[in-house]
Length: 321
Image (tube, rainbow, N blue to C red; front, side, top):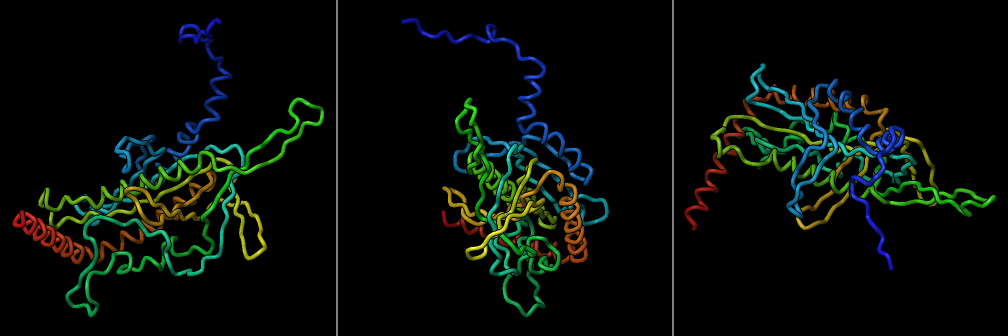
C-alpha cells in the first residue's frame, strides 16, 4: 500500500491574494489593528499581543491588546502615579453571540470587584472613628460614579449561534441554527488570567526593594471582551424572556483554578461602541485622579505605613529562621 506523501513547503501551491485576504478577514488581526488607533486617541499606549505568564502552567500567553495610561498625581512629575490598564480580548464573530442576563438582586453590590491595586493598600486615618484600614474604593466613594456599581442586569451564561446545513447538496437544503460555546471559554479564561497577572504586578512590592516608601503607585485593570459582530442580551425573568441587541453588557465569571479564585467583572463591548466606552472609562479615570490628588499627603502617609509594616514582617521572618 502506498503511503500518502505529505508535501513540504516547496511543494505547496502559493495562495492567491484573494485567498490571503479571506483568511485574514476571518481572523482577529484586522480587528486588533482597527481598535489600536481608537484606543490611542483616548490617551492610551497600546501593545498588540502582549505576553504574560499563565499562573497555572507557568508558560507564556498572549492578550490581544494591552493598553495603559499613566496619570501623574503631582504636577508633571511621574513619581506618584495612577495607572489605567485595559486588557482586551478580540473576537471577530461572524455569527451573533447571546448573553443570558438576570436582574441584579443587590444593585449596590459589586459582584466583580474593582481591580484597584498597588500602594498604598488602603487608607488609615488616626483621627477617624472607624477602626482598621478602609479600602481606597470605599474611602473615595467609587460607588457614586463608577459603572461597576450601576449594573442592573448581569450575565453569567452565553452562547454563540452556529449554522448547521441540513440535506447539504440536496434541493431541499436548508440551514438550522444551533448554539455553541466553542472558542469563547478559552478567551474568557485568558482574559481573567491576564487580569490577575497585571493586578499582581501592581501589588508586587517595590516599597522595600527600592526604598520608595513615599511614592504612590496605584492602578485599575479593566478586562474587556470585544466583538466585531452582533451581541445580544437574553433577559430572563421567571418563565419569560426577551432578546435585545446590545452594544455593551456586563459579564460576571467565577473561576476556580489551581491559583485563581473569585468573581471577575468583564465588560462585553461591541466594536462600534468602543469609543463611547473608552470615554466612560476616561471620565471615571479623571474623577479618580482628582480625588487622589486632593488627598495626596494622606496617601503618601499610608505608603509609609505599608513600608513600616512590610519592613517589620520581613525582620520578623528573618529572626524566625
